[in-house]
Image (tube, rainbow, N blue to C red):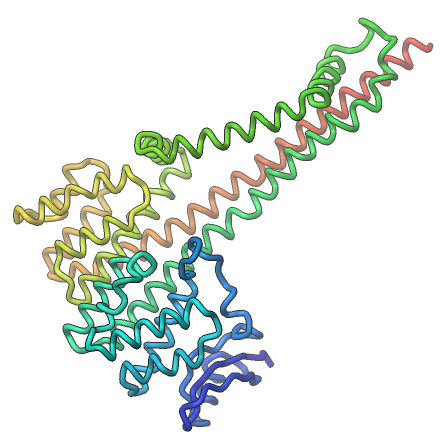
Length: 405
């Protein structure tokens, strides 16, 4: 049977880490609850052991995304178990194994004990948690259902993490394949072809044209390989500098949206991010105008973000979101119609979340289609160039044999 690792709070209030075998995750969780344990985390295998190293840091000195997800999940569990906020923070401090997290929790505990709300205590860490997170907490505090809001945040963060991990995982293999293809061709030109060059040196014009072209390319790589490497490095720095400017970043985002397959994926990914954020905020009592403004800030593509900027003025003027989106002529009928249905039915938050789910499915399907096209293109491209080099060498060898005869 599968082995599950867990972290839980016992009846005595102490943290327990352990593992057990069960036929499934639900059965394992039910078994632990029958023992009187309050679950904090349960993962297949050694999930709890490597929990802290799941994601790389967002930036120097910043909290990791996984840290924020773990903090939210564990705090939600403790509050649902009936612990007051200050007691829950003390338990989390005892559980903490990283100085950054302990420092955060100590600061939150000090703020809560001085009379601040959790959202106010988190304000110094707004750069890590973001406006969306803090506004969700404020809505939960105002309505007296903080634990429920934390549950919603956990689901939101888990969905965002899953979508991000799906995209990253899908791009790993093509990236490795592209690097291997380039290195293979460079190695063939830089080290294999020069081994045959002396064989063709005395043949003069008898060397086939294709062979001469490959030898010339190999000579160039051998003599100026460092220059090629320097040029690629310079190009990378130039592109990074360009996209660090507003004009360059906007031009890049425009070109991304025009790509045949990638453009649709990027557009739907950004719209799904906006819709999920706005729908989650609206569902937790945040005003429409504030929810839209926060959701727009989460959009990464500047072209899509600028198109969505028409919404705050339209809402202030009392107009419908669907009408403002339709007038931009940049959003598909599906987006406009689902927003319109949400407005007319009074369930805008639910329709935005449904739109996010639909586009998330589209994004995953689009990534699969894109990879189905990209992988064979890379493989065939690498095979074509390597075959070209081999054919050129064989033609040269056959020419040598003809001269010998």
